[in-house]
Image 1 (cartoon, each protein chain N blue to C red):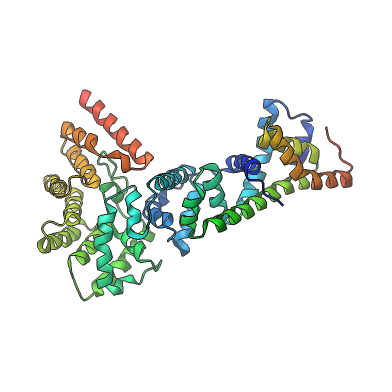
Image 2 (cartoon, rainbow over the protein chains, first blue to last red; image 1 turned 180 degrees about the horizontal axis):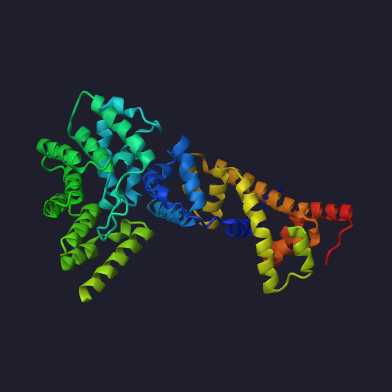
Length: 290
Length: 136
């Protein structure tokens, strides 16, 4: 059958539209977000790729968000992918984590035994950028108390691999701290991040992790201090600012929280994330008026 | 009474009511046709056609050359169109189904109607002769 691009696409659009599965699989959302960078860079393979495609297939809104990321990527016209792919990521801070954690991969070779076999997958998977990735809403409410069972097994295996590594440098401690955070072991994570800070007091990732661990154990003043230190070291950190805003909300300092939310540079975020921030600002403004 | 026979009963498909009815009847068949595509191809078509993701970005995500992606998309599209054609062929009342398909997929666009008719004509015509069916 000869394919006629313009007319056939119009017909196919109708078929696809009317066949569109409307069921959203929110349970897979966190995992999918982590795999987005790999997919955009054409480096998502095997089971992860299939799971990600299945997620896009059954979640029209997620697919639309990914499509928007792909289109914005074109505007920026990146010449390289790999770690640089994070430049158009929804969370630009990843590129710093990418560089830092990439080094840890070279050191802790044992860790590279991974389900996907992809170094980049390890970086993206272990990294935690902000509290929403740990099951918190912008308003500070925990919507998920623990990691998902499947994720738990993977993280435990990763932790075991890390513990077999001979060299324990800053990046090793960071990697371990992020895994512990995801495993809902904030006290242990805090120890790991503190050890990283002992080695490198100006490490932004360590402060970020430390702040998130403090937040989870309800040490909000410590969390605030950690996130503010992040912002001193890296004023443009979107995630530090988001985390700070969430912490200030927990401390019931709504005016300050609103101020931080308004400062978040939303241009680099996905449309759904931008909308979520706008909704949180609106919620806090209403709270303020009451 | 089969779904296709139900469609035949609405002997004209020019009204909005008929369009809704057509959609109800054919949506499962469309879902089936789309669902039969390989997952990779299905998502490729959705990202390309529904979401308008540029070829270059899709090629990067699929880890293949843009030229190969175009060919892959063509094959996937052809496969889906063939499945749509099969919907018409399998129908007990092919003419009515064809009209339904045209209404849903081509609307008032004469170009699309002609193209769709072209895609469907051969097999449906053959099927009509065999069945002695000339609905509408």
